[in-house]
Every structure is written in structure tokens, then in C-alpha cells.
Image 1: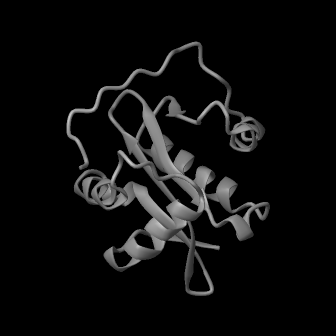
Image 2 (image 1 turned 180 degrees about the vertical axis):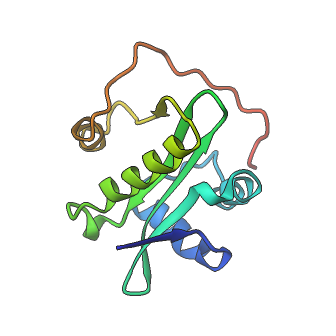
Length: 139
């Protein structure tokens, strides 16, 4: 798998990938999420390409205190081949190069497969409760 920066022509394939992976929610417009990411640290939004097809994606960010990962996705039929781990290594290296001391991500507590994936990569549950507040609705 070749990891490269997200390009605007990738948008439809990436949104379809996120739908196939169950990452989208009715209250988040994935097209707006992509537009927002392209406005801030767009170089930390990459895709994995295999045979000319987008088969994986990840968005990362660094606010100067913590790094974050969003929308890590691997096409269901391509899982178990190390593509997700490769993207996470890419993110970890990119954030480390920026001086990022810690990386955070959110996983739904019911998603045991993904929790096991991250545990295998060395991630652990933090003793914190995630809180959120929507500032802009994606109607």
C-alpha cells in the first residue's frame, strides 16, 4: 500500500470508504469534515492507495499539546494485511517529527475489534471521560 496525501479528487472514494467502514454518523457531514481538515494541517490527511484505488485513510492533527487521530479506515475486504498499522506508524512518525508528546483517539466502547487493534499497537484506555459540545451543526 502506498501512503500519500489526500487530494480533492479522492473525496468520493474516501467518503464511500468511511460509509463502508461504519464511520459516518447522521450528525456529521463527511464532506464538511473533509473541507474542514483541508483548511487545517491538510498534510496530516493521507490515504492508502493500492492498485490505483483508495483502500485506507486517516486524519491526524496536533494542537501543540496533544495529537489526535480521526477517520482511520481500511476497506473491510483489505483488513488484516497491516494497512491500518502502517497508517498509524505514518501518523506517529509525522506527529513525533512535530514534537507531539502524546497521541489520543476515540473509539466507540462497543467496537471491540477496533479496541483490540489499537491495544495491539500499544494504545491503552486513559482514565478520562470524553466530553463534547457541537458548536456548528452539520444540517
